[in-house]
Length: 123
Image (cartoon, rainbow, N blue to C red):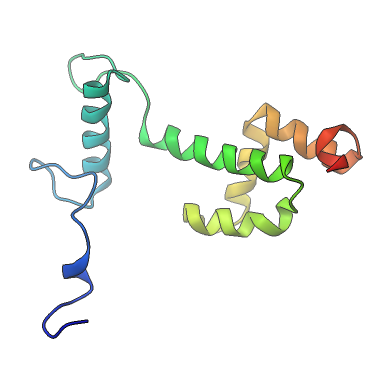
């Protein structure tokens, strides 16, 4: 690193920031995401932030799609799960297991893997 430069000075500006809210606060992320969603037509324009997708919905979708991909690819999901838990910032792995119960397709893939039935078990 060049003299006088710090790691933080090389970082890009925050993605979800607002001039009205201190950067890095969850409320700033939600506010900025809501406004972007309105501009893209994903969220209705209403008083306040309107109704529509939330950042947490995107996070849930990412986690569920990652797990589905692993099952379909025949990967050892038990072995891979700590990677996803770490990426999501979960302190305990049981916080990540919740996704298996919350998404019907994932629950079916996990059941098929355990019972030896279905496409996932034959991979």
